[in-house]
Image (cartoon, rainbow, N blue to C red; front, side, top):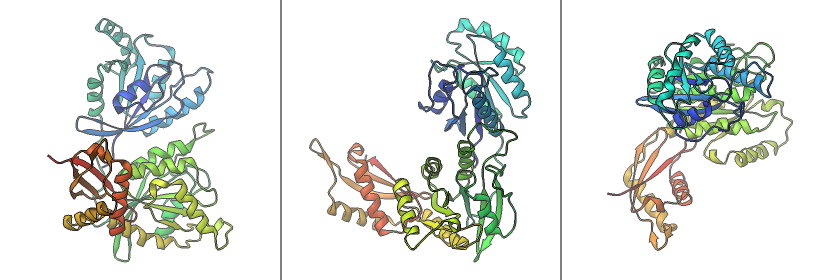
Length: 436
């Protein structure tokens, strides 16, 4: 199911980052009492009652000439374009300002539902100031206090009313859904076209020419696939905001709907920090992952080039040590169809179940090889292990004291499980739990 997207929009210094952190439940966004300090959109998953959604924090929108304001305007406009629901945040302390009216004019142009929040209403006496905000033309203003966490429930109740009904296509359970994610211009759309054998998706050297996600059905050697293509944005004029940052939200939407995620790298350009950030979302979401090095035809190489590049990938993507690496060229179609069997294999691994009896034998042997850690005379005792979920494979380890399960020992157990079963391409979750 695709999560709705909520963007928090408003002029600088109304408390967008504070509200964002309250809703997200953790301190993700920079909070500082200087207008314009939030210069990048920040993304987070959030939940309200039974609703899960993606949340975007934007920089403010202004028409002055302060540093970064034009860039911030670009970021906010793109966030507005992506959102299903917009929280228009204002400040009760300053009242309605000309900058608020400028934001309102931008929001009038969107067809998206807008919920008006008035922040910094820290006590009941300030509620009389709300009436001025009706003039902005977005209906009832919702008083909130980001610093005290007051009023967010009513605001989120209103936001949730506008969430679109999920209209994701339902596919047969045996159909493998996979997507290509990565920075703009690494060749995601070209890969889709190379597999489908037709110009189904716009391909251009201009970064961000794919505007919307596209589903394509495909059958290869009796296996049905759904290819979810996703990429950046096409904007008129000069784009101040980096489309690489924008690509993260596109990746999130594709990841949510995929069984297997292909992280596409540009073989010509090498690895960039943004590649690791995007890949991290797939790993954290528990999806099966394949690292795809595209444009390999354009790389000058000898017999050692591929091995050296693979080693570089392993050094940069330590958290994806389980992911297979495929080198190919969408342009020449060389090795393109070697990717599909890998997708099928890691998809099967992602859904694999292990018998509890065999699993416990493996854990017992692992403990005999490397005894459990101790802390202040207390030793970790492992009583029983069982698999509780697939996609990704998730194992609960019942122990005497879960806090004694150090990360390093958890990683050791994961490696022993991987040594015994083919979990290539899929993350593994190990959850220590107290045996009652």
